[in-house]
Amino acid sequence: MTHPNDTPANRSDRKKRGPKKRNGFSLVELMVVLFIIALLATVVAINVLPSQDKAMRVKAEADINTLSQAMELFRLDNATYPSASDGLTALVSPPATLAMPQNYRSGGYIKALPSDPWGRAYQYRSPGQSGTPFEIYSLGADGQPGGDGDNADIVG
Image 1 (cartoon, rainbow, N blue to C red):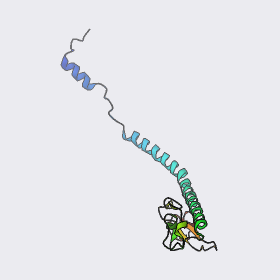
Image 2 (cartoon, rainbow, N blue to C red):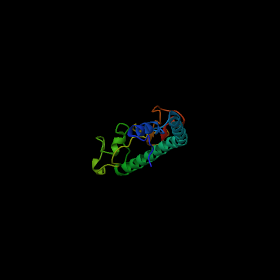
Image 3 (cartoon, rainbow, N blue to C red):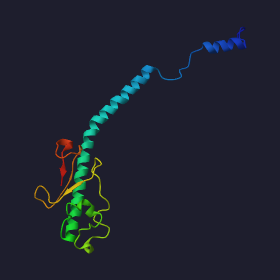
Image 4 (tube, helix red, strand yellow):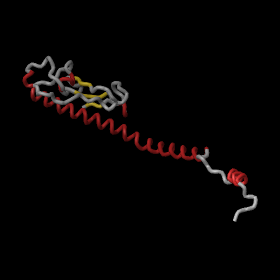
């Protein structure tokens, strides 16, 4: 049964005055969500970043070991290590100073020279400073000789 004053105009007025619908989130709700996201990001950063620094150091050490093994293969085939001027590129393509290029392995000793985890080229010196025939090293996170912690040189 309908109300006597129930006309189309009255019905539209009642719809306008009815409970309002929410069309979004309040500022407080958004701020709470942003605070929770920032808190989670902080916790993740605190726990992950030290691990990333350690992982970069371990990767540099592994790369240096791989390059050192390729250097030993080079020496076995060619009876000498590359000169300081030939550098690590001697592992990819035969150097011009090589006495017997026929002993050089086709395809080289590695496919390509890797960059250190900080995006710089690995360094090579022959003879090494510690009395070894050669040293392959990375200058660490700061790219400068010496340093300590993450900035320390990584020598193999």
